[in-house]
Amino acid sequence: MQSRGDQSTAHRIAADLEIAILKREFENGVRLDENELSARFGVSRTPVREALGRLALTGLVVQMPRRGTFVRQPGPAELLEMFEVMAELEASCGRLAARRADASQVEAIRKADTACGNALPAGDPNAYYAENETFHQAIYDASGNRFLVGKALRLQRRLMFFRQMQLHLRGRPAESRAEHAAILVAIESGDGDRAATLLRAHVAVQGEKFHSLVVHLNRNEW
Amino acid sequence: MQSRGDQSTAHRIAADLEIAILKREFENGVRLDENELSARFGVSRTPVREALGRLALTGLVVQMPRRGTFVRQPGPAELLEMFEVMAELEASCGRLAARRADASQVEAIRKADTACGNALPAGDPNAYYAENETFHQAIYDASGNRFLVGKALRLQRRLMFFRQMQLHLRGRPAESRAEHAAILVAIESGDGDRAATLLRAHVAVQGEKFHSLVVHLNRNEW
DNA sequence: TGCCTGTCACTTCCATACAAGCACCCGCCG
DNA sequence: CGGCGGGTGCTTGTATGGAAGTGACAGGCA
Image (cartoon, rainbow over all chains, first blue to last red; front, top):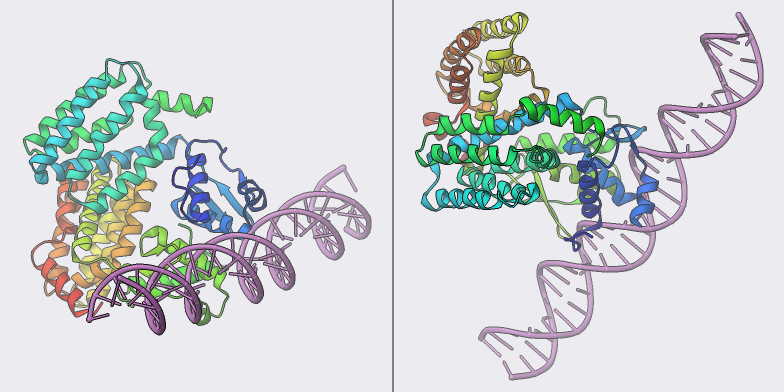
């Protein structure tokens, strides 16, 4: 079930665990037993330990010395903070993209936008989600700052399931598409501040999006 | 993320190596030999491996499977990108702080600013650097977003030695202080956009700062 | 002479064994 | 009856040995 299977075992374990935690398959505070994990993955404890150490550094688990490692699921408050940072990162990308994007990069953004529009009538939020991601990715690329792109991608990955969730709100995909259009115009006209402001509002969690987030968190459907 | 009270050897090794790399005590591309490191630290290879794995995740070293781990010192181009992200993060903190800071937090920023002013006549860039850090830290705290603060602190730590270096430019501390004053005013008056713009310019690497950076990089004095 | 191939040494990576520390539990004492 | 202290089991952290993979080098072939 793992696509990139030629990697070293420790990396594979870390990747699998990361996905599982991101999918909220573990409750907050659950202890990850090294022996149990080593049995489940069919390897010894050493690679499991390395994988856990890696995960600890990204903040998905916390390691208490001589106590063990515990998964750390962000609650609503921290999730809001993370979305706020996501919004700021995207805003920064947009600001830079508006100033630096060359013709082909603007074209890529425009193309992704129309693809979003085409995915809209199908009414499948997951299909829209995929196109939506390439739209944002195109803006990342146009920012011309690979370090910034790396940070944005990592956080996006971490919030993936929640962003996907939000698109299941009735009417949200259409709304999202409209916001994309305005962002595209701002970038085309080279207005960095406006692109930043629009992107910040586009990603931020407000109003209905906030309610939906909390409800799903409580129902634990994610 | 938590490096407090580490009795464990692996964490200590990771911390020591991180400092050494940040101080540019290793050239770019140098291979970190597990045997050599284990001998130097007087421990076995296992904790060394864990430490290297941790460092790989932060991007300070890269691990090529079955080949080894190599230190990865950012060149001028990437360093510029990192400073640009730092500027954006600080700008975000400033924007939020202008809106959310309560009286005591504003007071803390003001106090740090005057401390910077007091450290100025001594003419010691390192003394000014310390006060400068608490000024920025005060703004971080006032942003009210702990996740954002964590990201800012980590990047600040990574760029520490370069930020310190810049203050050795003749006249830079006084210039910095003047910019601080304007930032303080913007936050006091609740003008988030202005605070963001000022902070972005304050941190960004431009003009003389850029030249100084490249020169020091080439002389390899850092 | 240039290229290919087989072998070798070195290194990483995983498995297993051992030591040390924390938590829990039970009995004891106030 | 409640708080406390020591023993015990389970867990983590480290050490070490072995297996597998990679790069380099030398020798043979075209």
